[in-house]
Image (cartoon, rainbow, N blue to C red; front, side, top):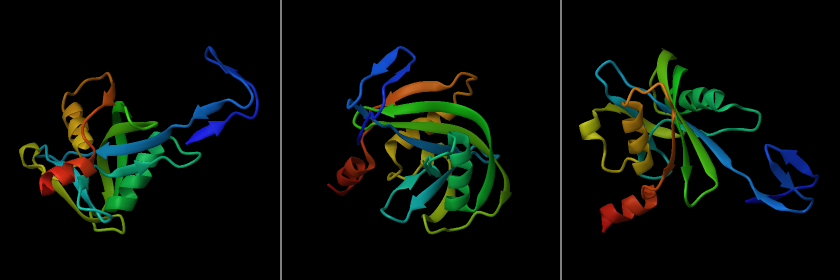
Length: 168
């Protein structure tokens, strides 16, 4: 949703005039958590039949690493610490930036929650067919073990398109 600039802003070579509309980006933060067998933790969503990495939206006043810690707790019951930024992902069809972090469990207990009716570890070759495609890409990026984060525009199909494909 565009936001109307109410004062003149100058910064990083960008000049915006009063009344000019500027798109606001939504921010997301997701955790990539591997166990000792290199299986990845996925959550089954309560709102529709799909598996995803634990995570979600960054709230006002939050930094992405703080958001991922909060989201993992809300969705899985686990306490985590951020180990590494895997990448920052954009989408061609949305004004959205998503941060993916490799995280390590430091406490808590894996449990069903109001947001995820099940959480489970999966081997990469046995990921559920209804796993969100962009999340599968991020999992593979986390396995590259690079010290440099990935900056990427994701063009994989949406989960809605993937589910329709599976049903058709």
